[in-house]
Image 1: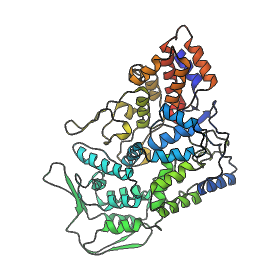
Image 2: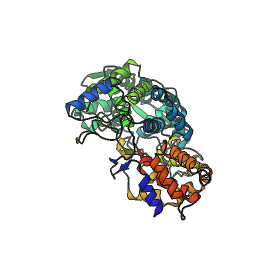
Image 3: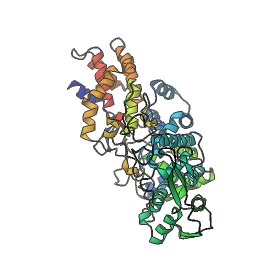
Image 4: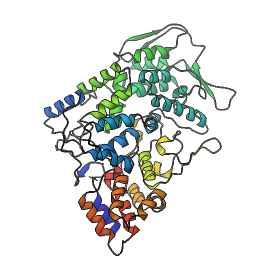
Length: 521
């Protein structure tokens, strides 16, 4: 009971079962203010004023630190990193941190995870992608993100490549599709690179898009499970196809229709290509797109901030499709750096980005955070039998190459199945089962009570209670405890029933079960 009471006392961001902020008893706002840092903010603030919505204040440094680490690299800052940032008095420290995180290895790991969800990267036994093809495909995606390969080149390679799916990894874009008929390929291409669902198009444009992929063929080789993605040599006639914007694509004999489609798609004036990716990045960073859902772009689903979206599209083209540039623009904006505490009760305030949206950590990020705090590793499993699969040890969940490699925790906390590429496959809605697992499971208990990193920290608790409490807060919540929290810990650690290390074990339980830890905010 005392553990539960301490946990309740230390909740820093209360959230209801839908993830909405209910109350914030700690100062998560900054006294400082930044003006509309770029045209994004100018457009957002203008729209909010039109609707009579008051924007949230700027978030505190501690809140920004934790938020940007989780949003950019899917990883908590260490206690040392938190101390360094919080003590830094430079007015440019947020911009410097953004630049530093974009260069971290974890950036490529985390955003490869995002792309692997979208591109349906997983092994399936005994059909579809084989594990070695998955490993090659994931490595290709990871390398592209680590090099910051221009997005137009990245998309063109996926759409137009041919060859062995073991030796030309990007052809697994086709090989990994659930439906490898022309219509299925067309639907996957439209969803991935245009953010739209082809079933809602006029029939002539659906037929035209399908025709573009009608010559793609997957055939086996003498090597077990290898597939060659190529053009059907029996189909060499001229081809005409109505494109999504109503223009007609004409392909000469022996030409690859996919290349002609890619040329059309990647043109700067194309209304879908840049819009889709900047809207997705916005949604990945802020919980929902300027167009919501990010994979349902259509004329009757308008953006909430149309001028802001157009600005980001133009910036992407101007920067030669450098996605890091888009990350910097969004992360540096006042809109991103707002507090999660609403200052308006308007029903559209959250959808219009009047405050930062509170939402639960994704399954992979949450278990990695628990492992980082405790100094433990997660055990994985796969439905594909060994030796055909590779189950890594001491690998962070955000860096898993294969969507078929999983764990009971990842399944329970809503990791996507990677069947459709839709954002809705990931389920971040909290459940009673998840809460019970975090509060009472032997899985979490072993991590807290036997994790080597946490054990060393807790062992110092009885002799250095204040120092230990501060270190636990920095390690778990990435901030210093308030005076009120320190007083609560001090009193609790002197109680007859919880004296010694037990008080700090209970404190750890309380902090990792707090909404402040479990949610992005």
